[in-house]
Amino acid sequence: MTLSNTDRVRIELEHRIASGDLPPGSAIDESLLCTFFRVSRTPVREALLQLAATGQVRIAPRAGIFVTQHTIEELEEMLETLALLEGACTQLAAYRISNAQIRELERLQKRGAKALQEKSLADYATYNAELHALIHSIAGNTFMVQQIEHLRRLTNPYRHRHLDQENRMEQSWHEHQALTQALAQRDGPSAMQAAASHVLSGAESLRRVAQAHPEKWEFDKRERYSWLNAQLNPLAGFYMRH
Image 1: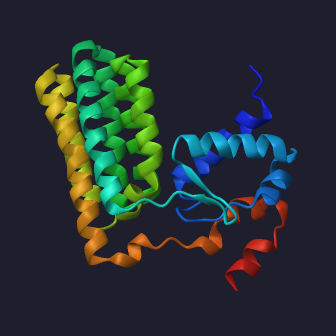
Image 2: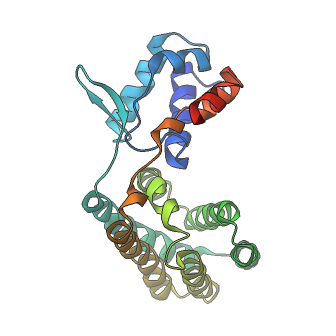
């Protein structure tokens, strides 16, 4: 199925916001987006309105459009909700998982251990996303997964920034190990507890990092269009950094 221009713009912006390429607080330049996507202003504006409706951007009258920047209190509420949903989803997965899917989870855990050993944040983030996506797929509840994915999109830019703090990456892998073992044993209540505790542990770590290292809450907005400039003008990224 061919995507409309509006959907194409929205999906790409969602990805860039969740990955941190468009960091929280960044002003969004409609003209630059039109140039990058080679579309008129109409699909860009429609995409931005859709993102505003889901809380990913905010539209400030006479000021502009910005990637939403959340407070630690807002993030804690989102993560509490995410913990409940992830717990329920993982419990369903425990009752529905196959032997082949257990082996796939164990294979992913080995990949995560390798990323941890090499201290590769990028590889760990990829492994983390694939592990959770597999669990969501096993659960087989599309509506629940949609709510989880939305909350993950809103919180990802913040959660990824503290993986290198407080040994969070190592702690996260061990939490995944407990979760994987509960799934392998098809122990629904233990799987639910492990998944919820994993999210809440990350929320607590996030709060400690925000309090101890407030600079971690500051995003470099000068680089907000580096992904665009790399294709629109090879020299632009150089000038933005100098």
